[in-house]
Image 1 (cartoon, rainbow, N blue to C red):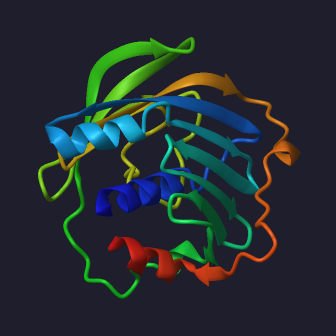
Image 2: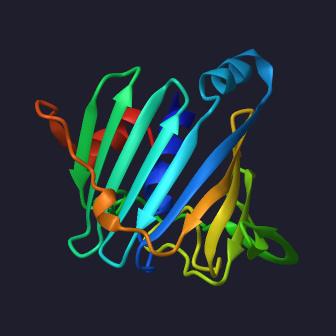
Length: 216
């Protein structure tokens, strides 16, 4: 379960700062798992998708994690205010606050190792370059990015060394590897279509409550 909440954090902060105007990307998910527990998790998360819409004013992300949960996030880039709504097996939960407040009192640790490769491939007509990131625990993630669009700002999961928008991401932990590949891309999205609304009656908690709940 810790991995699930860590994944939510990745999805929330990975796209918390696009500089483009009206960018929309939809990703499909492929899950490779080993072991009985991993295979069960993969079955529950089969059919997962992620949608991202972003402008210079806000970023919106909606992640459908199979039958487990749906996570929707909206980041007000002017006010540095993040709002998250989660629904699914654990019920409805909402969180809001300044993401910069999270972890500000934690001790600084050595950053991940980032390697930019010469290898390239095409995704949705965009020429993408390869980057790999290895964290302190030895887990390696692979990113394919296009330099035609700026990388997200204000996040920890993708270092500043990656100079572009990722159209494919491969992340692994706890015997499971999840690969997100862009299947739709639009560079003139109408941001009015992508707005997060918290259902009436759902208590809005601080972002630290979500952090503590997942052990992130």
